[in-house]
Image 1 (spheres, rainbow, N blue to C red):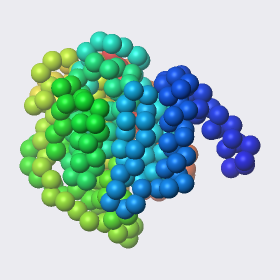
Image 2: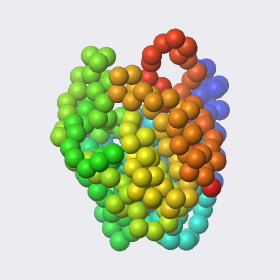
Image 3: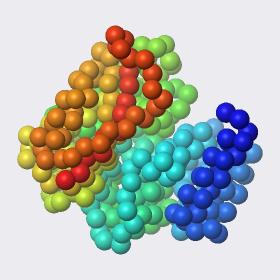
Image 4: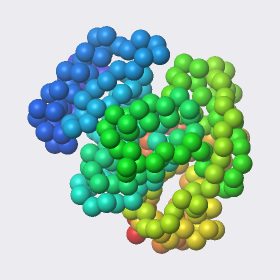
Length: 281
């Protein structure tokens, strides 16, 4: 990428953030980001950055920048600004970047967060406490699936709070160093008692299990909008994208699909790939 392209991209990001936060808050964020880039947090410690009226803690600058770019600049999980007390479920909340976006766009939102990775969940809970969101936000330490039980969650050794942790050991098959936790698995339908305005689903593989369990439990009809990342993982999660779209459309959703990465050759190759699916009624 040329210097000119990089500069243009940074200007675009600055203008986008100014629209979300305002000029003064954007400058404060940019200065804090530069400081953290020059002096990254030491291993085991958290860095801090102001984001509008909120403050956000994170352990790794690289992972924070990746998530922040995806969620704030690309608005992967878009919410229009509202003061209504909307109901949101954030599956795969990680350290809370998506929650931060939700609370900026919808300050009165009630949010249920699911995050099975204990390291990521610790940072998530710190961010909730630091911003006084305890009244509106609940955190559950569960993975989600077709039934209640236990599973192993595989996480990269190099990034304890990685958002790519999965119950499928697909990275281990590539000889990337990993460790695992035994975690509890629950069903999402148990947590839906009224209309859900937004269901965000980024759980690295078992998306079919969650949606089919909601359909069986007659709770999918209570969800207005779904924004999910569909994963195809060879040997673990192999149902095609077409089945996912058929499932959603049969439940009354309209759908739109967007690739999450640069196009690559997958014809006659069994390789992992992912897509963002937006579904609404």
